[in-house]
Length: 157
Image (cartoon, rainbow, N blue to C red; front, side, top):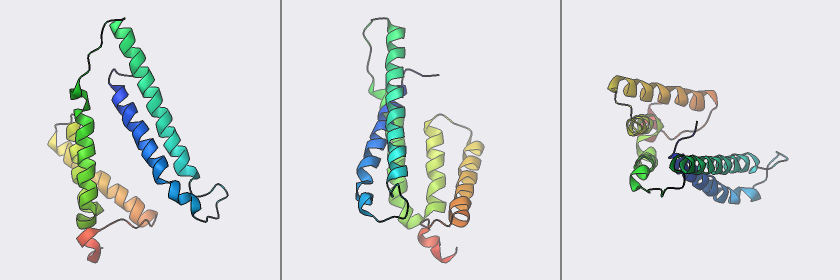
């Protein structure tokens, strides 16, 4: 179930949870009709991410200790490459979002992540990226009435 390099996912999950906890601090002052307040669900999700990250780090360390049986472990920056590439793709996505909008920014992000994790079949990458974007856009924009950034497409939709 767990792999040796799951500690990378664990570290990223803990960082995401910590950033989320820091980011929702300003929501605590917002008035809400919900008795739990506007920060309840984000706080639960953030602590859940931190817990999942801790589980992955502990499991990866235990698995590595079991495999090495006391031998010295090697540390490689190469293990961080996929994480760094996905974070870079996310930053490009966020930067492009106001200009290109969600419908044009999301497919390249999905395609890039698929390539980074090892998918090499171009037809599958294109289908997944386009269909996932279309389904998510329909659900959030029309189904849930969420205001997604449309960029220069705002005049058409």
